View 1 (cartoon, rainbow, N blue to C red):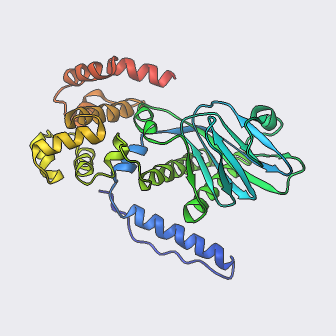
View 2 (tube, rainbow, N blue to C red):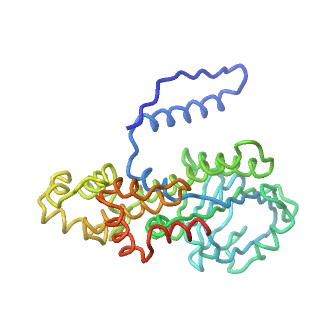
View 3 (cartoon, one colour):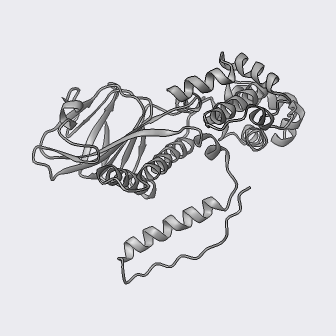
Length: 341
């Protein structure tokens, strides 16, 4: 549990307009509500994703335009600031996007953005080639349509666990969530266009904000038959067990202990856990411990025996044996190769 001292923030309406003051107050209220609670399961997981290599650009267009993006690495997010367009992901049906909407593409699938529904467009690499990171490209003279876009890579084994739970595209309709994403993308563009002290960390935190919004939106959407860790967070009993595992990964958990936390019988708990997550409770517990260990091993001052004790192993050798069984690498071999990458 992290305790943060109470603080007061006043905003002078004489120096900024009312709408800006309201927006800032909303951001502060969200921030205060966030820091006053302990690390929740979603935050716990997303913290392991390590977004990096962020690029961002603006797109200003007019007339009958279309642009085709090939398969890509990382997660892309596009916020429509002005006008409207059509989106088609990997040949799927076209979706209309209006000013205030955001589209998040987590799997690197090819997609087309266009002024009207089409199946082909100008190559995005050629369109964006003339501008630097954080700049804006103009097509057809611009003025009718504007989009802010960002792409960043996600590293670490946690990405393999998290991203498959998301659909091919998440569309955030105009509103508070869309405003937050649009503001984040614009801020990233500014940080890339005019780098300052602290820009790297600012971009990393903004990327985390975009990721968190993507997962929250997916959680809010109904997906019948969905399995995986994201589905588990929407299942009352399974989420209780997972929250307990994340809160105390070093505890010697038993099936009975997890069932008691979930509020159901051991048999019901085990069956429900497997049905929702696709894993047994102990399989999930072991995987989570290994993900934590992988993250800890990336630190240059990582101490093996400390990592072992943090995830419930009584000795370094017991930890090394379990780690190799689960990952195929010894802890030291994994740390060397991961750091070199």
